[in-house]
Length: 74
Image (tube, rainbow, N blue to C red; front, side):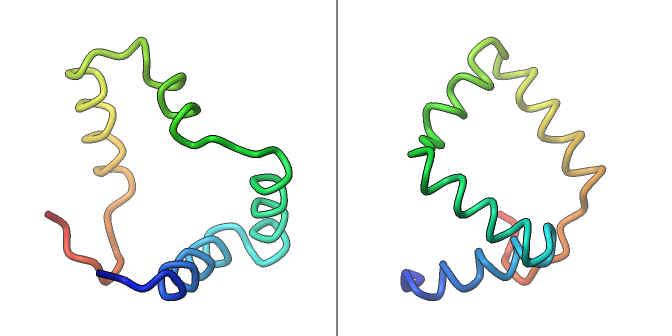
């Protein structure tokens, strides 16, 4: 199991890599200030999709954004 500090460090590295330092810090600020609920957002975003549609969208995303990280894809 990954330690919380390691997860935070890796998450910030990804945010900075993808967004840049300023936008990464802005993202964190928005999440903290808005009391962002990721679970609720995810439920609302995908609530009208069937499992097949969600699977197809995920497969298409994976093709367009090949994994280049160090983690193991299961």
